[in-house]
Amino acid sequence: MREAAVVLITGASSGFGEAAARSLADPGLRGRYRVFGASRRAAPDDPGDGPVMVPLDVRSDASAAACVDEVMRRAGRIDVLVNNAGYSLAGAVEETSLDEAKAQFETNFFGTARMMRAVLPIMRAQGGGRIVNVSSLAGLVGVPFHAYYAASKFAVEGLSEGLRQEVRRFGIHVSLIEPGDFKTAGTAARERAAAGLDVYAATRDRAVAVMERAEQSGPDPIGFARLLLRILAAPRPRLRYRLGSDAVWVPRARRLVPEALFEHLLRANFDMDE
Ligand SMILES: NC(=O)c1ccc[n+]([C@@H]2O[C@H](COP(=O)([O-])OP(=O)(O)OC[C@H]3O[C@@H](n4cnc5c(N)ncnc54)[C@H](OP(=O)(O)O)[C@@H]3O)[C@@H](O)[C@H]2O)c1
View 1 (tube, rainbow, N blue to C red):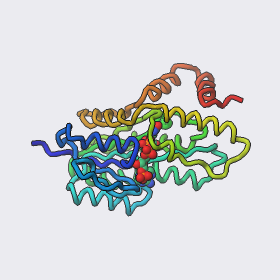
View 2: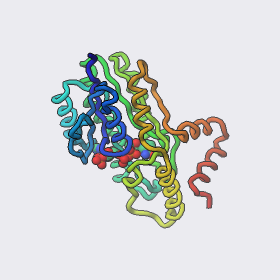
View 3: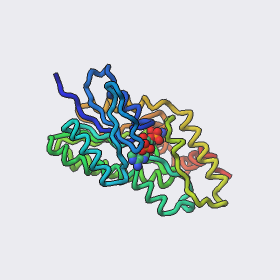
View 4: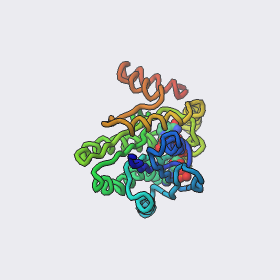
């Protein structure tokens, strides 16, 4: 019998990560994957064959190392890392302190980098592996009042694209999932710049409300789990996978229409035109 592939999914306590961890551990897959989920709120281990939860704060080197050590202690290898942990920071650039911006990068960007640095030596020694980094439609299109969130995801895009070429010869495949708006606990976990400015308040609140409505009326995160299964089954996974109809048509529209029109449509979408 083929040995189960060992999968480590960060941010597995809710949303995309939870859906993916549960789906990959589903008995219907007959043990194809041995799944470890990781997050700060490590829920108690599933008593059955579900994902095993390991504590992890992606902002800490020590925590990342301890999490990877724990998976190695239990499973002896790591075949797949899914860098999914993240949150979104709302607020105008002028309203956002650099500490808030750095915190956004510490989780979304450096958290991803930190986990990759922890697993790459293991994957190289094994002779292969897969890394799937969760970006966003906001990693392709800068979003007003979520500019630092978008910047952190643009950074994940660049990091993944470069790394993919570096580690190809070690049999390590790097891919990106770029989801549009999905209904997850991410809406409630959204952070906001603390020192708001009156001059932005009305426009920012409308734009953030549009974003939150789009998320909460978006599809169920199970689609993420299905896409991840497809990527893991692909012999040569692609660099980019868009997830959700908006993640497909928005970048396509950007290529097709003049820039000024695209920007007008973006402002109109976010209810920004005064
Ligand atoms: N939902 C969307 O519409 C959407 C669209 C595009 C991209 N995304 C991206 O998808 C990913 C998952 O988001 P989601 O929508 O599923 O949101 P979610 O339900 O809030 O899940 C976020 C997960 O990240 C974990 N996390 C946050 N900070 C962490 C830290 N410092 N260390 C370890 N784990 C941490 C959270 O767990 P703990 O709090 O327990 O640590 C949670 O499990 C994020 O990278 C997000 O940017 C989401």
